[in-house]
Length: 296
Image (cartoon, rainbow, N blue to C red; front, top):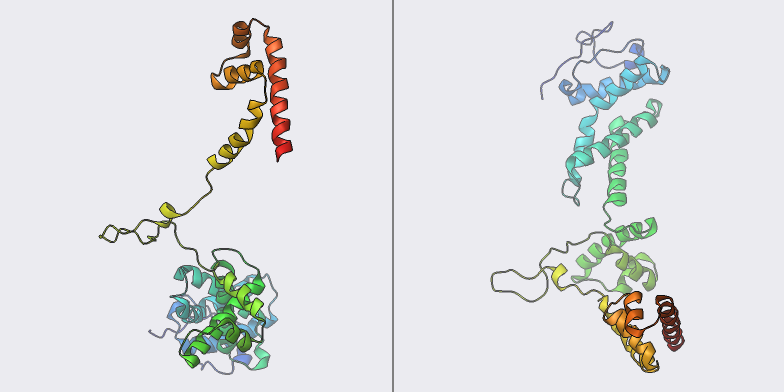
């Protein structure tokens, strides 16, 4: 990366060294392109901007310029921290960079130059912490309580450590002893871990295979409740109740629901009024309904 020196308003940073920044907080250099600032110069200029930021009134144009320039000059810290998460989950690097930038902004707002701590040392943990929170809150396919999410992280570390030490997968009892938890708590955490990632129903599964590697998808072999089961149960419960009806009641039920005739058509066939058919049908259905409810 080439080193470029920022142009200035009153300060000539080409002729003056970038130390003694506390003596030069009266005016800030104007930086046209922060990406051309060398990392070493960016660290020193950051001290100057932080010193000035402390005495500027929030909301003013100069305050916004100082804060925005600090963010732009230190975006390399975000890219550096984000690289360690490039293979983590399904997160796009652009999203990780954006989240890391939020961590950088928080670090800038909280940083105190008087503590004599390098901003880099302060900012990196803030950026990494923000990215980790992003994965913790968004990477779970199924929402689980925060307590179980944190337990999942502890279990993952414990399993890796015990697997290395024992040269095999640890048992629930060994995990519980390692973490100082009960076995029930470990089991709860392991079950919750299943919600971290969800598989697609289109993923090949099962044992059937046509020889070409075309195993059926999980969606094709996944069991489900058959809605017709309830209908079969209702018909089985209804059959003995129909046998208890008299001939006319059974005949009316057959005409109405078996042959799907209207009440007027039933009345014409039986030689009675449509109103009479309606009363007979209502009385018969009530008898059947009461019988089914009492049997259950």
